[in-house]
Length: 120
Image (cartoon, rainbow, N blue to C red; front, top):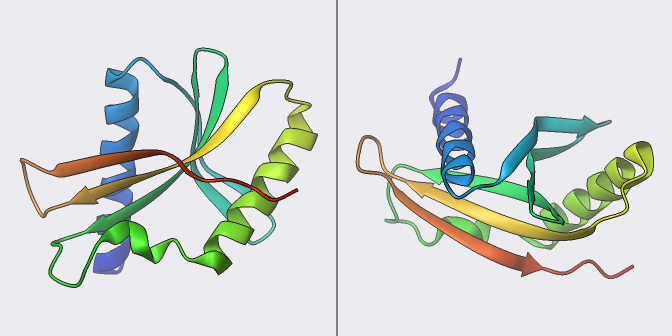
């Protein structure tokens, strides 16, 4: 497996553990709708949370959350719509970004709640 894939998998695992430690229930990892994917789908009380995880070895080249551009946002929103329809979810929902920076402990984890809003 390519190094960037290993880093991404590790970041998603750490983000999931972070959410669990904060009291979230994690429902899905890498949920797919066609070619679109949502890294983590979790729930905090009565709010469904669609989470995009970005992992980097360092912040040398800028903030990892900046990689969630307009194209990625559109894909995430489309995948979330498919999820909501498939499971007939009747909850409030939001889109979060979690960044994981580092190659080993201690990792720097940043959680951006309500990172963007869908326009539908």
